[in-house]
Image (cartoon, rainbow, N blue to C red; front, side, top):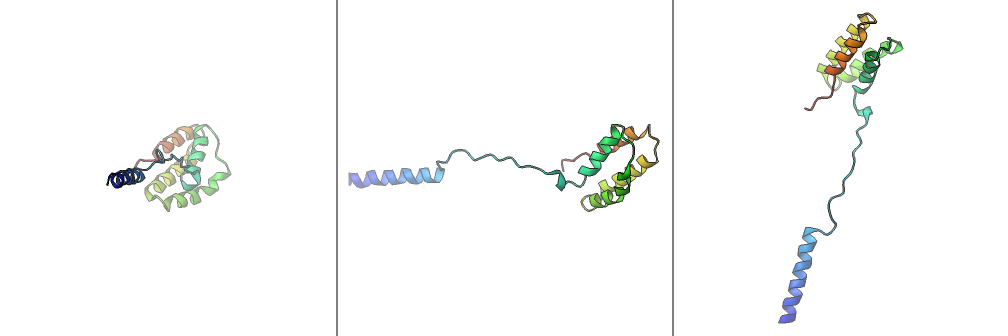
Length: 112
């Protein structure tokens, strides 16, 4: 009788430990977010260069495609980007950095 009780207690303890787990805390992983998943990555990098004073270059020809890529994900931001890029193209070289900075602020990631 005593041996049966001891065995039952040991089995119960092992079962409880099995349910609680003995492997320690959960393993932490770092998840890398790639810029290639963000259609605004390229427009933001172009706008950052304009904000730093870079002149318009051949990338202007890619503006419609950039807007199209953004429109596939976020139509409202695509409209903002399209209007902002058109305004930057029409602006004088001295006012482009300020316009680019303003547009960058409007295109910042949101916490929706």
